[in-house]
Image (cartoon, rainbow, N blue to C red; front, top):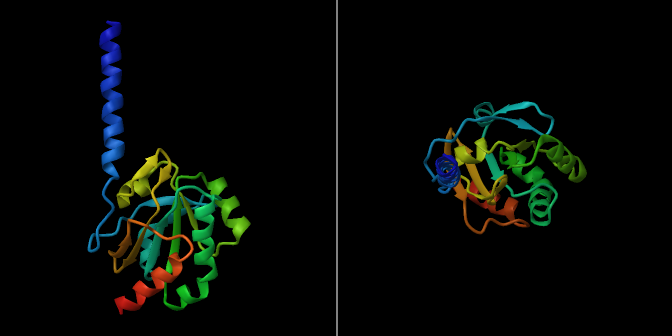
Length: 175
C-alpha cells in the first residue's frame, strides 16, 4: 500500500509540474487576443487588465524579481522615459511573481510611476504564456497590447537598460 501511495503521489507531482511548465512555455504571439486577468497591484488593489487596455496601448512587461539588478535597470529605464512613453499614449504594467509588499517597496524605492502587479499565484504569467525559470521567477518578456490584441512581443533577449527605447521604436512603427 505504501508503494502504491508513493507512486500515486509521484504521478500527481509529475502531472502538476508538467502542467506548470507546459502552460507557460510559449509566450503569446503577435495577433493573439490579449489576456484579461485581474490581479493585485503593489497596494493589493485589483487591476483588471481589460479595463487598462480600454484606456490605450499598454506595455505589459514581466521581470524576474523585484529590486534585483536587471529588473531595477529595466524599471528605471521605463521610469526615466516615462514622459516620452506617455506622450505616445503608452500605459505600463510591470509584472513579477513577488507579493504586493515587495512590489510596493520596489515601486517606492525607485519611484516608478506605473503599477507593479503581484503575480504571486502565476495566473497572469500563465495567461500570457510567460515561462517560469523556477516557480515564481518569470522570464523577462514584454508585450504591447493595442485594441485588445498583442501587437508586439519581446520574448528573447529582452533588454533592461534600453527597454523603453525599444518600445518607443516599436510604437512609432505601429502608426
